[in-house]
Amino acid sequence: MDPDHVERNARTIFRNELPMFRVYVVASGLIYLAIQAIELIPIMLMQIIIDQFIPDKNVERLLFYILLFCGLPMITTVLAGAYRQHLAIIAQKMGIKLALKGFENLMYQPVSYFDKENSVELATYCRAESMKYVMFWLMDIPHLIHGSRSRNRKGGLYLHGYNTVS
Image (cartoon, rainbow, N blue to C red; front, side):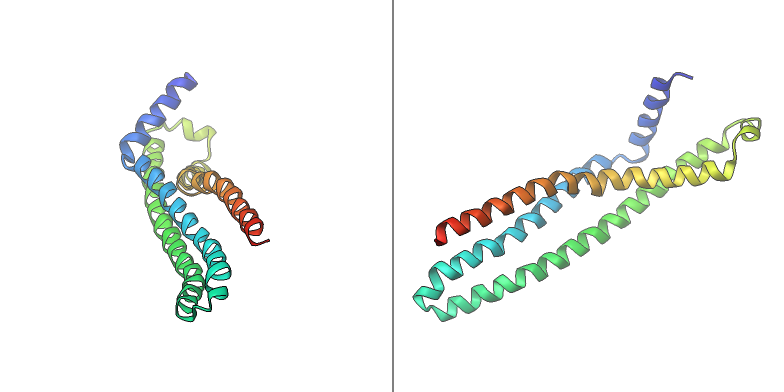
């Protein structure tokens, strides 16, 4: 059997079985980006606190900004936890749907096929690979893309903050 034909057939099955997959991949990336952006706010707040409110002895605004400075990491942690939990549930449902389609395709193989192949190993492999594939696209890719960009931005903000203080 032609490998290109097998790959095209697999992509068609994937597209038909999981029509919202691309939407979830894009949404996952955007949500992760928003969480990363919220994590940058305390860095900027600290600069405002040190440069403006402490020298001006503006206690009311200082307290508000310090509470905001301390509260944002907690909010970010809750948002990141909810994001990961929701994403894990979606990924698990999609992975199960793909695995069931793989099992269905295994069921239609001729009996002679199973003389050479172990059906339990094939079923286990099908389930594991479908889950890995879905998790790779929904969680790993957005983290890799935004993780490298986030580290560069945070480093730039820290350097910028040190240059303006001195």
